[in-house]
Length: 485
Image (cartoon, rainbow, N blue to C red):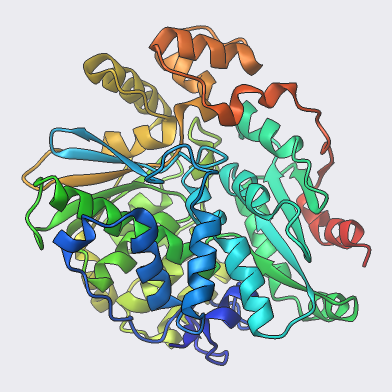
């Protein structure tokens, strides 16, 4: 199966080539030329492990990888670096089922894909007989950077370059990034916001002059952001696994439609659930949950995408985004794979800061509903959920929980991070004073009678090694300096 660009002006490539490239040469994102066939026998899948289901999904989307290669990638990605043998777990609350995606090394859902991507990428380079050093270039609003560095740290023949906004990330996120010890890790804060970083990174990934300079040094770019198909496909797995568990536990009958509720900024996690639906996951409704940077809420409610608004630093920092890159992939399918239409949308967004969907394309999106939560609503939701059920959630999951409305369908809600990644906000919600650092972790554990995850228990004992702060306009030069180009 080949992958094509959403903008239609780049050659079709194999899955291994798409993973290596990250972004298509025309600036578009890679999508499957056709949907792969996957036999979804739900009762049978309910008896299978996460790894077994992941193998089937990877086989379907990455069909130029051998069976042995996929098996190796799965065993390396989903092993003892997880604190749950099942990789993801379900917490059930009546008709609401939290998919707990935070049992990996950095306590965020991005670990699910970013433990796999390094192995996908190194295998892909061997398949393509490439000797180039791969430079992973990543913009992060907090979680992608830490998860990418955890995955790529000290991986042979790679460099990982991460840019994050100086203001807005949590103390835990900052500490995770600044203490990364991998010899191939380059971490820099920028004075702008995530959108500034992402815009620069996407531009650099398709900058022909810089690509040529890299090539002369025996290097090439790729991306660990969800613009890379190698990031997106692993996220499909947990929606299929979670539904299979609902069938196994007689919560739903095989084929019974469910709702999926996802807190999101860059739209990748929602898109993965949509991809799962195209494989046969029965979905009645997708709920797109945003924070006060509610550009997606307005988009799904009006058909107009307008990034011309003030950027807000909120208490759900991993979702503080105004340009949702992965939406471009959904537009490609919603428009009937009309790459010319997608090009017009993206051109209008770049030049005018907005675009308006055609009636036909907007009509395709009827299964998507969108809501947003204010910062005070996030705090209230954390408090209410804990007081009513004793269950502790992080601010991003709280955005999704706020957007949830109980109805006839069972609902899967993506619980995207551990509350221990954002102890200040969670403590404030529980009306406890913040003191910072490890003290907040200890207070949260004591207040809620929960255990500090091993992944962060000694985090504040580590030495800070990355302290550089730059202006967004100097990102290109910073990359050259870091890579000695």
